Image (cartoon, rainbow, N blue to C red; front, side, top):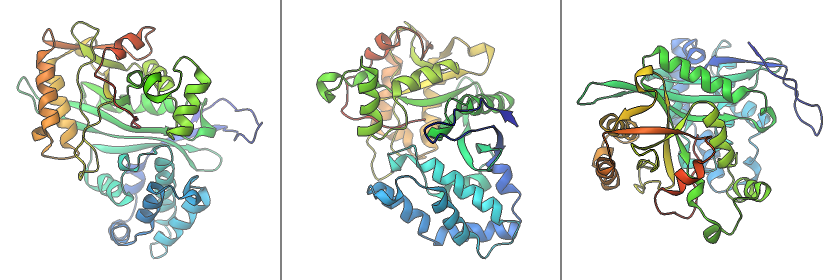
Length: 361
């Protein structure tokens, strides 16, 4: 278990004495085979969780907070025909799922519990690291992602993709997020990954003229991102957080121009790419601590997108992006720390702005 600072008991804030980090894959793996198979069948045929996601998409106010009571009720319904041994595991699974949905207002960036269960059962490279409150046993944060095999002409390699990291708002300032991120990176190194990647908004491409708010005013921008756009964190602060974890935005060999990146939508009926997204990289090996060959960067982008759609390499936007990477000066890409003082100048040098912003890790 990992101790956390005791939070002030004011304003209704929860006091976290400590938390444990556990693997959801290992928890699900403890299910008896019969229960695991039955649970997969239940999730495939019971619409309650998918209905919940649908209501979230429609802005149903009754589901805004995804309360623990709702998670408990759904878990009881799902596990009523399972063995007593399975019930607490299902409760943890659903508890995680409600927390996973809460911070991401774009519902197309989350997946049905049925899909996540399939990953946990069938993809040995995919896992969820959960932070569980020592006192209540509730899931108060998680980090989910996978180790991706990357075919490359110069030699195949592995990239770890930190897809979603979140911490309950009442549990922040307790080092939970940084602990989860560091444990995910430690696993990546153990698996021999070249590095860890995250996708992050580029808020510097959204100007005051387009959206009518002042980036220089911290209170105003926080209200805009959290209240108007529904994001869980001001993306400027998100840059600082991931920068402290060792992540840098991928730029050309000149160290100034963000390297092009495309992320196709997880809603496969919509092939529009996300223009305001950049890729950030955390080296996991000494060989690539400062730069990465462009050939490897391109191969990694393709491999990441093919986890969403196996035909991703043929998407026109992705083909165009690969050509733009080829046009960058030099044979490598570099990494500028996301918390560097002049990160605004680097990010403003990116692509033309697009109205709106997508939530990422």
